[in-house]
Amino acid sequence: MNTKADEKMKPVFSEGRRYCLACGAELPPSPVLSFHNMPASAQHIPDEEEVLQDEGIDLRLYECLECGLSQFDCKPVDYYRDVIRAVGLSRTMKELRREDYRHLVEDYGLTGGKFIECGCGRGEFLEVLKEFPVKIFGIEADPVSSALAAGSLNICETCGTRVPGSIKRDGDCNYKNIGICDIKTDFPERGDQKLFGAPFDCFLSFNFLEHQPDPSAMLSCMYGNLRPGGLGLITVPSFEYILEQGYYYEFIRDHIANYDLHSLESLAKSCGFEILEEGRIGIGDTLRMVVRKPETEAASDGASQGDAVPAANNYDKFEKIRNNQQNIAGSIKKFTEKLAAEGKSLALWGAGHQGFTIASTTALADAAEYIIDSAAFKQGRFAPASHLPIVSPQYFLKHPTDVVMIAAPGYIKEIKKDIEVLFAENGEGVPEITDILSI
Image 1 (cartoon, rainbow, N blue to C red):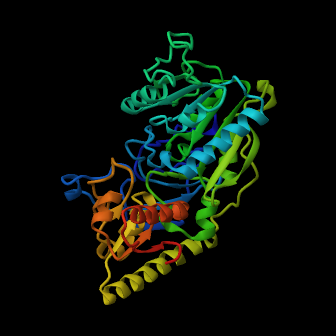
Image 2: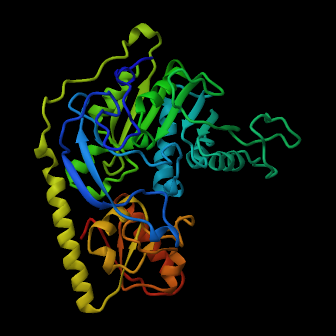
């Protein structure tokens, strides 16, 4: 399926790109927001040698006047095809996925259907899908992650041995592993691309589309590999949430596109999809959309761009972000000065993009001793731009600070409980706990 973006032949990988990622329209001459000393990436976290060369970057946000997509004009991160999912083990996230799958299987009659996750990482979310009576497929661009996904997902629940995806449940011990998974190293990047196992009844894309420099190609690929009437579930970070809250620290170069419901709907329709459901989930920081491929091609012209958008940028709607960036920096400066006057030490919890950005753009870069994170692959490295060391919860337990600030807004309650349990189980007094929203 051809889209308006295809016709533009836009230079999506260039620095200072002048065309919209989604629809190909020319971007306005001036950005609506600019940021200084931002982390160069959220996932390629520098080690002891790399941190010596690491520097913060400037980010410029433009709003497309045709489809409404807010986007950075920089090159994408070099790992945009790969899914690196540290929060895949979160209890909160697992329950969200469980609710999604139950809704799709039960309310849309997809029992026994073929599901494929576009960008499955190491299989964290497909592990939850195994609880449901469906056939499971996944594609992941990173060969190491795809191999790990295949190995971890295809384990016989009876005897504990690995079950290759090609083996059916009729082996020596009558395999009971629900939903034997077929995982392939692949990436959806062309509308005419055929994926192994197609056609599918449903595709899944969890917070992956916002990384893509050519999102229409990805969605067109998924469209072409669905059966007529097949469904798709898409989630992306909510740009409405960022605007409403003024949380500038939600911006990161990895998220080259910042979707609101209008721009996401416009993109999905331009790729031929019908919109069945759309809304916001979690604390309102995530958009969720259920789409459907029409039963017949004639049911969709593949060119709808949704409602008209203003002919000029509405700079006022970005004012809260500008003000809050200054207010947050000022509040943190006062907070850290107060702690210093009291002789109290400080640590951050959360080596995600919010924590990295907060640290690099405020006084926390100098005031905090380290950042705590449960993801083992981040530990022993350094936060980009601020260069704060990243340590494990056990290190925090043995070398506690007087105060810990949670820098992951979507997981404040969960992390607070984890900190309390960590210290209580070891008979230690719990440090003072605060969070970025309180500050």
